[in-house]
Image (cartoon, rainbow, N blue to C red; front, side):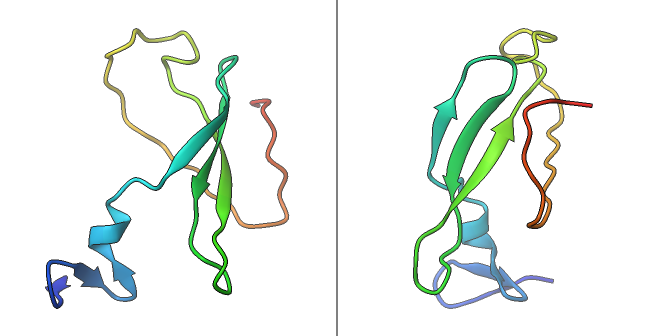
Length: 89
């Protein structure tokens, strides 16, 4: 069970849940087509800020739902060595 630490931060293992619940800074690279691309702020690596590349699509961007519709979210994260492609199987 999570234990509060000094101040209002809640931690579990090495994770500061208070910080993890905040959306990172992000910027769109492209919002054309059904699949959009973006960069978001990652964790520091050897003291240097990093950015993470991601593709984004939803039933709305795919033209299968109207704006304001609710649907579950799915996140796919994979390790290095892969190549991100816009095409879907």
